[in-house]
Image (cartoon, rainbow, N blue to C red; front, side, top):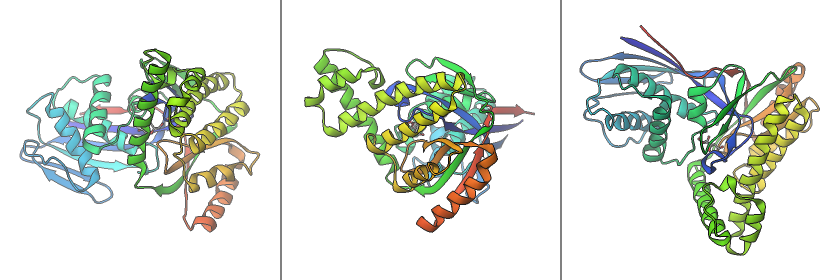
Length: 368
Ligand code: GLA
């Protein structure tokens, strides 16, 4: 049996760092993907990538951890699946990708979801999408060491072409929103920056938010489940017991959550100008209150303000590098890419990568 999987990347229109706080996000999948080709093997497993990495192992004698981070994704998936079915089949998997890694468009979740889905079919595991999300999260949390939320996995598994998903990350209620931006399109500008600190800082934010929530609950004598559900008033009332940082983090999360709900209404009513303004507000909050931006991303967002044809821009994903997402008039896209590319290169000496992202469908599986 052969199984082919097309596992897409995702972008997020707005709603950053709200997922693990039980808030809303507004992501969609894109037309770039990690593609995996599987076959069953008898003796040993062999996984190879189109950028020259390969690993060979037996599913029953897999090491705990590798020095190569990409191998830990494979190890993590196999180890987590063995908890469900102890005897897995050895397999061959060739991986090809059109998704740049480290750009904040979820190449790692696309890889993990693709691996789980492929091995699910090869081993008759009968996993449903929520199993895949849970396993994928366990891989990230336990084998990679990042305490990520569920936005990426949910989007990869459930996205529909030309739709964004207004997802409530507390209860996974989802509403599909048409995103025909008419004469506008989504332009990603990949800063090509990948800060080592990103994972440590990400985990730090998760902890700060949990701590802030516990304090807000105890001061207000409440049992609010998620930080995104507290009110600005409750934060204010707790301010003598919260650190400066915790006040900023909590305020950002609550404000960003409102912005997602407002944005989905604005997009539904075709009010892209106001939506663009919220994108800028989101970036401001991520930079000043959540403190997950970096000078290269700030530069790219500032550059976007030079052009009337850009309605909004902000950093996207976990932060400390990766992409900005820009809402750009199609007729001006090429001119804008040329100009910002030149300015970025003369400022930082880096040749940025520009990607026009088309909202695509979720993961696709074919077997034969
Ligand atoms: C990363 C995580 C997501 C989400 C974003 C920030 O992409 O994987 O779960 O938390 O950062 O919005």
